Image (cartoon, rainbow, N blue to C red; front, side, top):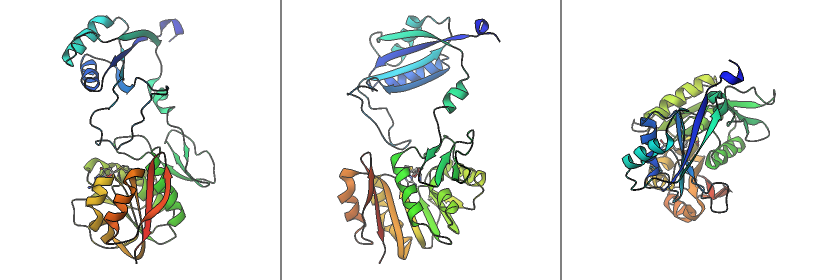
Length: 302
Ligand SMILES: C[S@@+](CC[C@H](N)C(=O)[O-])C[C@H]1O[C@@H](n2cnc3c(N)ncnc32)[C@H](O)[C@@H]1O
């Protein structure tokens, strides 16, 4: 295809609020948009409001000023489409919008180019499957963005990976509680752990972790956290969120052997004291590291 033949698309950018953004995005998809995304309308400005959370923890993007972007066919009547979708989303008036033509691109390539290899430490890298390993001597975790949380880009995952790298030695047993994509369990196995078990409340996470472990050629087991789980481990790591971590305190602590180590993340700085208190009956925790407002708490069971 020559440049002149290439199909152009229309890119719509619509300003709305957090109450209507998701419904508007759904209506646009329903109406045939090729792709839709919701972002902070103030992204890149001093008013930008970063949001961190695991999938499922934020049901509606919480930006007061949200921008809904959509890619639609070039002959679309933008005003008509946006008016119809806005009404479906419960908006009384036509929202402010802009539109511009964009040339056809390889959208898969564009998406993939947004995920570059991540260097976790001197030797540990997270590399998307479509990239070559950046360093032949690197210890590589092959992880693709997918359905389950844990591609290594979140600060809490990085904190846990860095701690595992400092902690794991050959032959250890490891429990990854809330395994998501399996990234921490896979890292533990690559770092020399002999027995690795990952559990998650989400069935999709168990499936994704199993296939990610196979792809990485490591031996690790994954199971639904609703299933009976017995035994104690040399190392337990749990990157969930403060509330479930508090509820799970007796269970998670119970899986750490005497002299074994525990790391918790998914905890905001201001939740630190609360979490330390929740685990105090079982083992003493202290802040090992912090990043972007998140902490990693670690401790040894007496
Ligand atoms: C923040 S993600 C962490 C994923 C991965 N371990 C990482 O560090 O990137 C938290 C995971 O915990 C799981 N989870 C949440 N509550 C849980 C619970 N009560 N029991 C087990 N897993 C849970 C979620 O389904 C999700 O996959």
